[in-house]
Length: 416
Image (cartoon, rainbow, N blue to C red; front, side, top):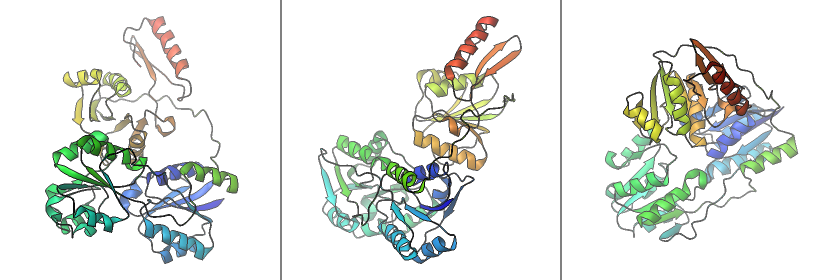
């Protein structure tokens, strides 16, 4: 079995980590921070380690722990890290593979300026008036200190981590200017921030779809403000997409997903939910249908969602559920049972990862492999409760069987 060292820290890195965890390979994922470590679920053949490594430390790790292959899925702008990984592979004689997200074009957008790097961006901002929304993180914030009105005009958007916030405050950024939030950020949220702080220029890197590049450009366009795009460093080696890496590893090294039992069987255990705390992340149709089922069994339901569909809002107005009107954030999972039911696969994945680390039972609406339990079709009659489930394999069969039971018992309280 091959041993694989994966340098991650991006959406692509997490996708590859999840993919390789299903394969016939032993993989170690390296991320820069402890926060990045929380985003990747450790499994039997996958371990995660946090901490920035020098080139020498990378070489020692590759040789000392006997890795056969190295994949670099770090951020497109982490140029120094990429150079160190590539050099460590050359020194140790290990194959090096670069996974890189596809570039996005800003063509067709008005009021867009381009800078080769952060240094040039800072020089250009000296000539631009008004408040600046900086969406490039905290790492290079110090390079903007020489821009006139730095402490008055800049509004940096950074990760909500204590050390990050402290570093920004130490550079003189007022607390009221610091936007410490975890993405993804929608076009609407970007636009709201632009309007809230009277932003005249949005600074971004060409971060691709995973980095919300389009959402930033569209928000700036709607607001009629400038966008300053910092170009990517030029790659010095051949690179592939996530799909390209998968195909290459299958062809060259026969690294592929292990065939698992297709029909996993679930034990039908009936448990009391009376008085228990259930969190539902999402307020759409699926979430509402499951909330209605759960309400029959006496649990306390708290919904986290920016908005509710009409049926779900009615439940809230009738005080049958609690509602926090906001998007889910890392650290929110505290219930005894959690339902990931947002319309974002990325957010649902993060919810599942957090629940697994906290040992919280979780159900994910859009991916049956991530579910600790399934929602059965439920039929009640004369003190009897029937729960029907097919392990997620055949929803129609379950629906038909439940309908037959309801017809047989004339179940007027039918639910799903």
